[in-house]
Length: 78
Image (cartoon, rainbow, N blue to C red; front, side, top):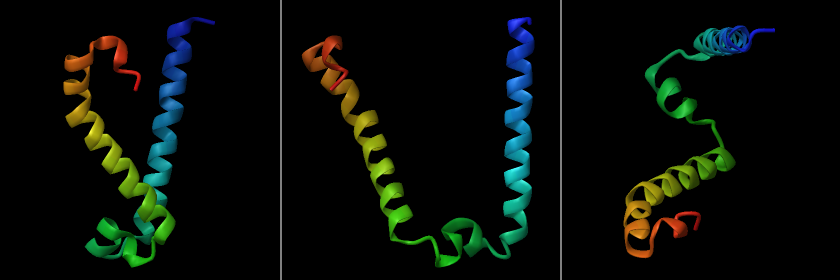
C-alpha cells in the first residue's frame, strides 16, 4: 500500500474522531462557564495535571534556551 495513502487515511480518521468528540462535547456545553472551566466540576486531579503541564511547559520554553546556551546543546536532555 502506498505510504501517502496510509497517511491520508490516518489523517482523515483523526479528523473524524476530533469532529465526533467536538459534536458530542458541544451538546454538554450550555454556557461560557461550561466551556472555559468545565462547569466547575472538573475535579482536583484534572486541575493538578493542568497546572503541572502548564508549569513545565513554561519552564521549558523560558529556561530551556538559556540552559542550552550556558551548558551546550548536549545538556538539553536534562
